[in-house]
Length: 426
Image (cartoon, rainbow, N blue to C red; front, side, top):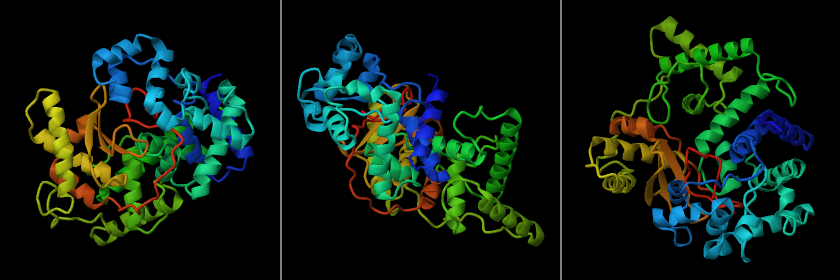
């Protein structure tokens, strides 16, 4: 089956099961898209190189250097699964108590069900013998039912079905891959708003062109009124409705007391255009984004988040040492960008800073890197080192503070997210 076939099947099951509210359905499909690697497979991809294995699971069951990681990777997927999901860590976190449990209960299905304990719990809840027959979880029909059951029992139960960030935490216990989830949810929101139903052909060219033109219009209006993405950058007027555009729309919606969903729906667009009309007629700026000129920069000791900045900077300097480069202004810029990302994702400290295996993303980690309950925020490395501390300080002032949330009870183990496989939480 193709990715589209799998997505359409899951969407049909979700709608039949009662997930029909457009925003909830878009969130559900976006989350499952990221979890399942774009709906491509019902089995976890465990074909790691030694380098990537070490980057994703540093220190797992004593794996601390590249030589050890290469030796494990040479054994193939089964050996890798038994090493990273077995041993003391697997017993404590996944309930994998028997030899071979790591491979037997590797990630399967749309939600990548992982670990003996999770297979057993889900099986009991659904009346399935997943412990003795774990392969049932990779059957598409059963996988779809598991995905809907998990959504209803973990996400809907917490009233998070319309909240991408909260649903992300409900699903995997953290915020890894959050930007990808927001982008995917937005894309599904748009498809559903255009009337997409399971089995329908992909968006026609003329419809895509109209959508692209509309997105460019929104981006131009947001730039005109001074709204920026979470890193303080003006939006690129390209018609692509990605994470940066969504962040700017959310900021506008918060200030205008509109429903904050990151979607430029009719109400949001009307308000944007009304402000533009007011500005054109009066010659005065129309409720532009606030300017925080008096706020000190993050590298100023008087800034309220200076301590968090110092934590990020220490982590970046450790990366500098590992890369054999001298700390410089780029280091400070990167640290400041990490603070913005951390605060945006509800973190209050930065204990570790890590790079993806290809260096394209940098991660801030709160808590033990092997803990189920750690929190992770990430930035794209190249844009982050080019974003000044001043720009990040201004962006941070516009980040809406998050209310404390109860510690989640994760179903999946989580690690620092890697761009080459953004869907795997392990």
